[in-house]
Image (cartoon, rainbow, N blue to C red; front, side, top):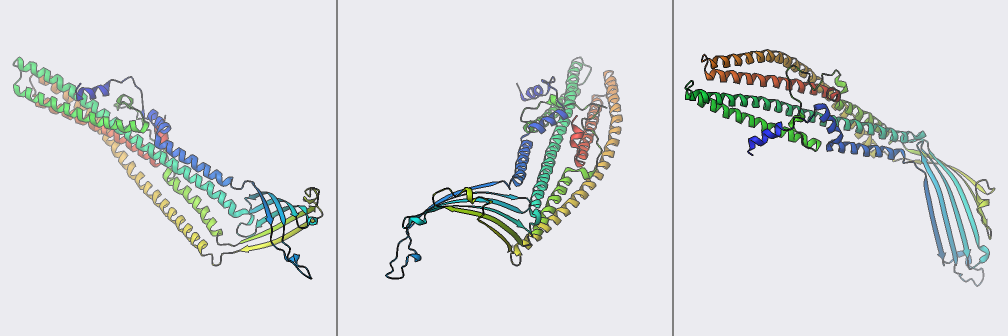
Length: 473
């Protein structure tokens, strides 16, 4: 099978397959690997946000220690004839602590310590001790009532909103590229069909001229002209087929399966477009909304940087109880509520003198915020200018479509009349060929205008953040 026959077979064997821009776009959104990758990234961003919310979980700390000591003790000196007695002790300690930080700048902890002390040099000193301590810390300045912690939560939430909007914009951009590829394939298919029709006419005309030359009704020059035209039509058709196959390959890569030409709907005269004209405003553009979300999270980040220059003033309070026993367990009498207790209160001020690093961070956050605000304004202005130009071009395309529609009717009538005159010997073959070329040119112009109309509708919908509404039925 030669290349021409193979390409023809690919184009026309599968007319029973159904497809449309809406169906293929839905498939691309669900199965396209580039979109799936973006969705996975968003899942990661969601988990990163949740990590911040779960960062203040309860903490359990358990430790144990055993110390054997043979160190000398100053208390072992005797008043007369003093000799240094070595220390011979064993200390085993266990600690269990529960602690939690809250999003209010507060830290709460409960510590339990059990100590078993054995003095081999003086067993009278052997004892067991238990200490329980409840402590509270509260920042009264930079993180007063948890304002820094609240900003951490707000920043994480706003950052996720920005990432979500960013993914939405990227998916929309990918979809816009897919729609453009589909429309290009649709244009190539229409042009291929036109070239196929032209080739069929050239074949019929060549067959007719051969009979007329054989019967002496036409000159050999007409045969040469018909053969030349048939070859030119064949070349033009094959060229369009190659372009169509390239467009179909591009679509196939995006949905990870083979797309056939029959799955691309035809451009038909005076039928509804696959791309709808949708209303909307540029302020709904997904790229512009992305910059607005970015501004929101940067504003929260800037507030957080502002708080970084303030010192930390921590109020700390603790309540401790203990108990020691020689033989019995000391735990029951050493718990909170025991007569043996201690209460402590204190303040700790921590201030980076000069706060140079914090001030630099504050300046950097401010510059970043102003930069994004500037970019957002430019994006909006650029989109509005593009929308204005596109609406103007669309009006021009509508005018061209009306004109091409009238010209198409005239070209069809002209070719029909020249064919009738040629069969009666009142017109030359060159006149028939020129009429046919004029019809093909008019058909291609009309199809190109339909393609421009669809492209403009999809682009305008993309500018207005309404692309899915324009193509998904």
